[in-house]
Length: 255
Image 1 (cartoon, rainbow, N blue to C red):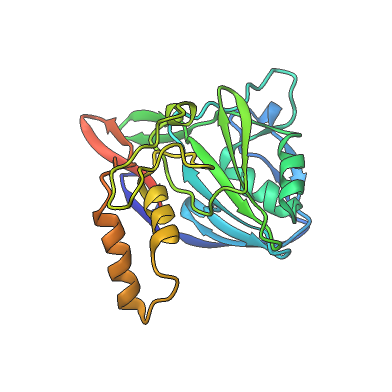
Image 2 (spheres, rainbow, N blue to C red):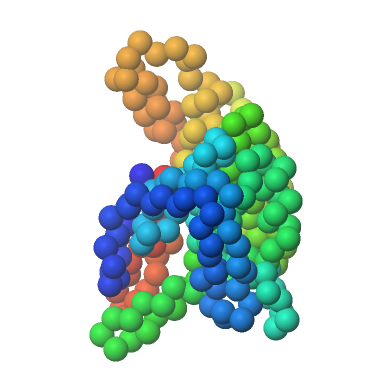
C-alpha cells in the first residue's frame, strides 16, 4: 500500500507495471554517460508510483520491495564509470536478472548505485529531491536479504527476522543500542538482529510475530491482537517532512 501527501505534475496513484524478458534498459541515472545498460532475462510484474516498480516479483519467484532509508549515501560514481544505476532502476536490474538472493548480491556488487535526483518544477521553482531507499528481496527458496547503502558502501543484511519497514535515518543503524522500546512484554527490544530501521512498524511487526497467538479465529481477532501490540509500544514516526515554498509535504511512505 502506498500513501502520498505531496504535489507533483504526475498522478500518485500506484500503477500496475509489467516488463517482459528481453527488454533492454539504460538506467535513468542523472548522468547518461555513466548509466548502466542492461537487458532483462525474466518477466516482471509489480506495482508502484510514477510507473516505477515499488513492489514486484519476477517469473522465477523472486520478490522485492523498496523502502525509505533517510540518510542513505550511495556509491561514489567516477567520471569513467559506465555501471551507474539509479535506485528506482534496481528492481528492473535485480528482478530482471536474478532468481536467488546469492545472484542478487553478485550482480549488485557489479554496479554502482549512485545518487540521483527527482526534479519537481512548480510555479517556476525547481526543487531537487534525492530518493533515499533500501531494497528487500526474498527468493522462492525462502532466502531473504536487505540491501542498503551507508557511507557510500553497499551493506547487506541476510536472513533478517522477516519484517522490514521505513526508517528515519541511517544513523540508527550505526548505534548498537539504538533500538530500545517500551512495551508490555518482559524484555525491552534492544538492537534487534537484522533491524535496519528506526523500529516503527518493524518493531510492531516483530513483537506481533513473536508474541501473538499462532492461530486466530477470524480477521477481527487478528486485528484486535495487532492493535494490542501497537498500543503497547511508544515509537517514533517514520515520515519525512519536506519544506517546499513555505509549505510542508510528506514524501512517499511505503507500508
